[in-house]
View (tube, rainbow, N blue to C red):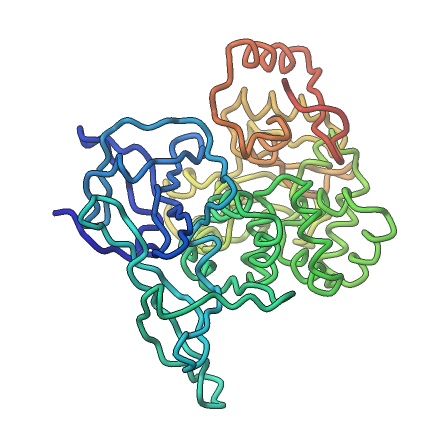
Length: 443
């Protein structure tokens, strides 16, 4: 059954289907336009379709909204959405705004907006769900909430006052870092920086890792050095090294000095390697254990929820010490192999004897061929003394090979690009992306 009134925040992430029941995409926002005397008119949905392309779907194409899903006529223009003057995105721009009650009863902050279908079949903003300032000094107190119509309030327009991004962050709290990064990149620049400033350090670090380096630098430089160093502490060392390498050398050193010493040492270590080598691609945080560790202990280590899947696919076995650069590297044990043996089996007896590590100066092209030839998710990297210094994972290589704009690419690579990439891989002549990896990415 079609709903006649729905709250926009609840639409975020809802699936969009065509009349045949095939999934078209998922809702990312609702677009409205202001009117002089009437409430803003909801003109359409911003829908993310496969390829992470955001397109506009007119409300006239929507036939049903209900039960967490939206049905359309199936006729969707797949041209990339571009916001025009006078258009406002509800989740990205309207939630979090401060309003003033026209009756003089005070101010409030918009936490959600409902849209309602009129008798003429159009959709307009019906009510605002707002929260008044808290009346208690208690840290845990919250202001009272209430509903208001658009005519009950007016937007507060204090010059220089930043719009709160808390409600936007709460609405998108369940998004994966890559999806949140794409959402933020679609925001106006000032709004993007407001959202970044209010994200927790760990969440912002995850999001930055999914952004192009130019946007990473722009956001980091707006945070202030102390906050920027805290965010860098939460990033993977290889991603932090790539980001710091984009900054002026003096600024990069200032941030390294403000970071936690252990994290800064890892980043400095990675910056010593050429960007087109295994040392320049690797991460310094693989799982490392002794030969006496058991299968049960190994499985416990890879269960960590914060561990990247590529790093959890295999465990490195070395002599002490067990922090890079370790003692002598003995070998790797793959996750699937551990599953075939009893919990008490020692990992030293399960080493993959057919996998040779690469050295830190091995070319990126050679590392790519090794991963592809042997169907590997990661390959260990050792120094001249056969000490483990890190691992190169498949996502490190993909990030290196893909063009600079791959995060915003529509996924429609033509045959010529694929043929060129295969040719470059065979010859070992792989162009380097911008930044630390100088030159241009694959074309």
